[in-house]
Length: 345
Figure 1 (cartoon, rainbow, N blue to C red):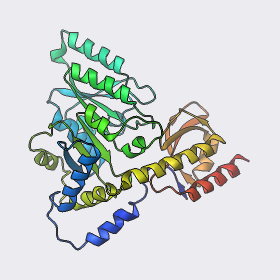
Figure 2: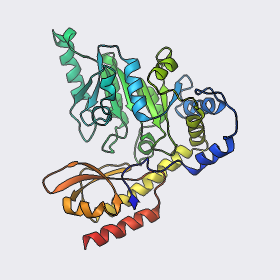
Figure 3: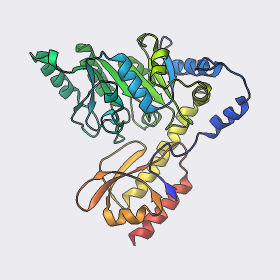
Figure 4: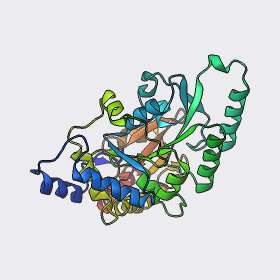
């Protein structure tokens, strides 16, 4: 069966797997203190052009989101996110479980609007009863967003300016960051993120690693005793080498960007195929493509192709996501085209 439901349905890039095999019998320190974790961190800091950054390697996106929000907020603070934001919709209440409320604002193709954010924060600041309310202490955005859309450098600068004005933190979820950075025409880079964000992470799980995310604190602002807090959250990996070797390999010879560009090339081919059969829900420039599929057609499609059903659009159609990744092949796309052509007859 063809699989286009997500970008983490394969193991890891072959070069990462080869490094695991080559280093498998080495006896290394645990908990991220091994030489591969140290090397990966230095390579990431260099890629961010931020030698003073602090980098921490974590196991997965949900753990990273929860730990960042919980360790960087006061008990009475919440996190602002778009109402379609991952922490608001797809974290199973992981953020709220730590005692921090997700404060949702309207989304615009998955993105927050800086003007609306400023209006919300100004209204909160002027509220005479705010001491009885959840204080906004952080803004959460993702790049790409849940709909595969991207912020521009100007949009990031505007949001960062609002956050600075109200002295709250800007956190960027980069679970699919590689695909966003390698989208043609984007003006957002790792150094740009290091400039505007208080904290962000570079996704590995969805971009060629077996698992893991690289969390970057670019402003000397890693919470105190961070390892102890990570362990309290049950996310401290004894065999830290698992993530360290992954990122050390991905950030050697630009492999991270090489595999991300491949996914984007496959996404362009995918878009061309989908255009022949469906109406697009929105224009996504990245590896996630959203189309409108009639209910009966979807049932037949799912017998041969795994896709992600996003939501109901109307009585007859669903919003369906097709996704490419670092491992997508041209042959898979050709087969998808044949399947869609046969079903459309």
